[in-house]
Structures are given as structure tokens and as C-alpha cells.
Length: 211
Image (cartoon, rainbow, N blue to C red; front, side):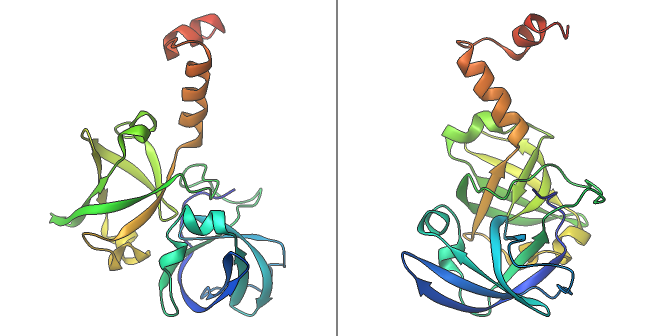
């Protein structure tokens, strides 16, 4: 489990084919002396298991499912990636609950300057629109962000300079692809509503004595 607060921007130092996926080596830019083989590390929002750790570098194996459901397949040696290690019981939950399970890949439609910030418009498949709400949370390449506005086939993000400069978003531009993970709480609520035959959230809250 992660928070979506990026610790560093790492560099892919090697990729080798393995079975139907590949083995990836990343220089995290972090001191990994306190981490161990088997720990989870998110790379651009994708939860991977470290199979080898040496100083700031770690190696992980990505399965075919992981590669096809994310942007991992487009990475190459030298690519910059967002790094976050799994949270601990003493970690501040500064972002939101992120699992590192990518729901889909989307394309940046527009990137433009807005005052001191940068606005990103990201395409959204209509089948996922039920998980997106204005001012709700979303993970984009593993970064916990707040949705600024929504249209029929896209959503907008307002990125402050600090977030832009401390993540790989500073390298992204129109046409680039990003990993999306929708808020897990929203997904569970939607699932509950569907299982209740279309009952609204208000109906469910009344049935369970909350209102």
C-alpha cells in the first residue's frame, strides 16, 4: 500500500526480457539500505516486488499482465520514473490510499500554463467515468492528485510547481501516456451500489443506519 507521495524520480538502468514479461533494474536515487528483498516499491504507480537490492538500485520482475495494463512496456534504459516505497505504520498519509494496481493507461490531451501552475487535461474512457468526481483523488503515474474538473471524456488536474518539479510529470507533454489508478474507496462504493440493484449512496447509508 502507498500514499501517492513520490519519494524520488529514479532512472531505469536496465531492462531484460523474462518469460512473457521482463526484468527491470532501477536506480531509485534513495538509500535502500533499510529495505529488503520482497519489499514493494511503486514505479510510476505500479507495485513491483524487489528481487534484488544494492545500495540505491533494485531489480524487479514484471509479468505480462503488468506490462500490458500499464506503461511499463514503453520504458527503456534512461527513462525517468516516479518511486515510492510501501508505507509503514509510522508513515504520514499525506496523499490518499494507493494500491499500486493500475486500472488503465490514458493519454495527456493538453498541458498548459495557468498562472504559477500547470494544467493537465487527461483523456478518460467513459467506462471509468463513474470512478471520477470533482475534487476527488486519483493516482497518475503513482502521484496522488486532486481532480480539478471533469468533462464527458476527460478530467483536468492543476499541478503546483513543487509537485511538477519533484515528479516525472515535469517531463510529460501532450500525447504522452500515463498510468491511472482510481480511488479504491470509490470503486468499492460503486461496486456496492451495483450489487444493490442501482440503489443510490443515500439509500445505502439509510439502510445501514448512517442517516
